Image 1 (cartoon, rainbow, N blue to C red):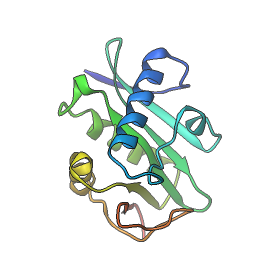
Image 2 (image 1 turned 90 degrees about the vertical axis):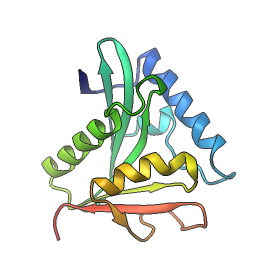
Image 3 (image 1 turned 120 degrees about the horizontal axis):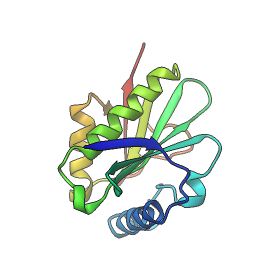
Length: 154
């Protein structure tokens, strides 16, 4: 059974998963196109991080960045390789959507890349009702990155 909890990023398992996440993003993205947050970026005041666990084993990580206004942004979603295709990312995404709703935000957005490495995540976002949108925040659109949103209210 997967348990999701808020995380302070101090544990070795979490830090190892973040290193794996950053390496994968850098390995599957053109130079200058990685916007995933590293450990220090995830420790910012406007970021909340959750980890998913099965017993004492980390299964995944996901974060929410609150922008000014009514916008939340998904950051640094990653499932541990030992837990792929077991519902971890879906559970984390559902948890983040619930948190966005509880915080009264109207829109949840994300930036991601293109290509085979990103397709499983894109399929999950589409299944949950995310639709393509324009670049938001400080992002600039490119041929590589994509933007999606989930509207909680109009």
